[in-house]
Amino acid sequence: MERLGAAQLEQARALFVLIADVFEMDAGALSDDYVQRLMRRDDFWALAAVQDGRLVGGLTAYTLPLTRAEIRELFLYDIAVLPECHRQGIGRMLVAALRAHAAAEGITVMFVAADEEDTQALDFYRAIGGSPSPVTIFTFGADAG
Image 1 (cartoon, rainbow, N blue to C red):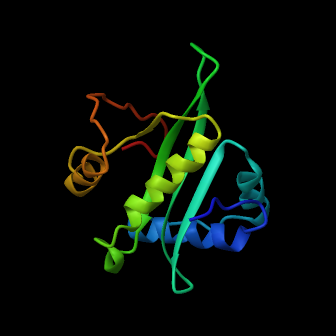
Image 2: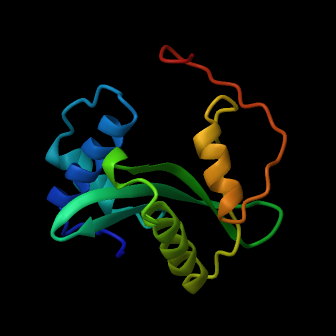
């Protein structure tokens, strides 16, 4: 599972569509310029899981520089695996690959938000060694809620 870069725009675009499809969200058409700018960012991560030449899952994440120390943490924003490919270890491998890539860059802490109602996600993150932290996230903006 490699980190996609600026040279892999079509793979990135396919990954973004897959994530939206798995989450049953409308995905707007992203311009080439937008995808190129996103994929060129050092603080953006996109990893794709491919089986037999077919995209079956992936994730996106962001590096966040801290202000209390000269370190960075990783925020896992989206992870999705096609439903027919669940329970094959793909999600686990994606997270392990992300953590390995991040560790190579000196990033040792990763966090992810999960909705309390999403028991499948909560069970997954616990199963791969995550520790839940009680927080409330507030959303602002026209698309909030």
